[in-house]
Amino acid sequence: MSSPAAEPGPDALRRARAAGRWIRNVLALLGLVMIAALLWFYVQGRHALQALDPQAGRVLAGFAHRVIEGDISGALSVRLPVPEAVTTEAAVAAMQRRAAARHLAFVPAPPAAEAGKSDPPPLRSFDLCQSATLRELLIGAPRIAALLPCRISLYADGSGRRWLAMPDLDLVIYGGRPLEPMLRQDLLALRDAMLDVMTAGTVGK
Image (tube, rainbow, N blue to C red):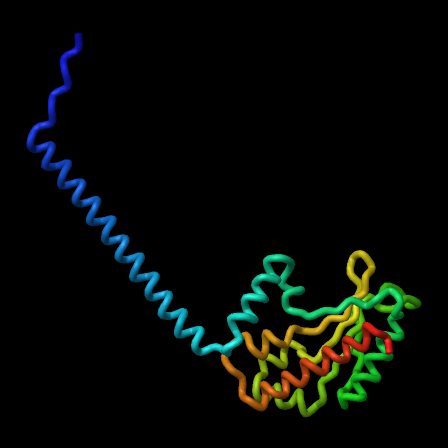
């Protein structure tokens, strides 16, 4: 028969208790550090959110949701489908008339690419900004102007379905620090006008 295991001596017990206390202290210290870090991030986040537009949370949450469900380019834009019954020519003509009624420019942008000399370009874009609006953007928010916020594009996806798309100006208007009141008002008016022009294009008249 094997002899019973020897019980640990007093020195071994003291070392085990000391190691246990050391581990508990380290874990407690790590817990305090994590709590302090969480509190710091919470306070910093509160300060950052307070500096943003009051609607920034809603707009950025919607943007993040669209990115997760699709892709970044789609999340940055607003698009409307063009019904099969509406020809491309009718959609463009309707948008041109609506832009004129709203005193907006409607300038065709150079096509990005062409399938052939006799084929229409797969992407057609139109700039709607007036020179005064562009000047205000360049002065008040040059980074916004670089995003071409006045452009509407007409394109077909991989299945051949046609879409009208424009930048999501809500990200520009609400997605950061509050804009100057006049610039905010101009961008809101531009957003509504461009949506109206796109809607006319989907109807074709």
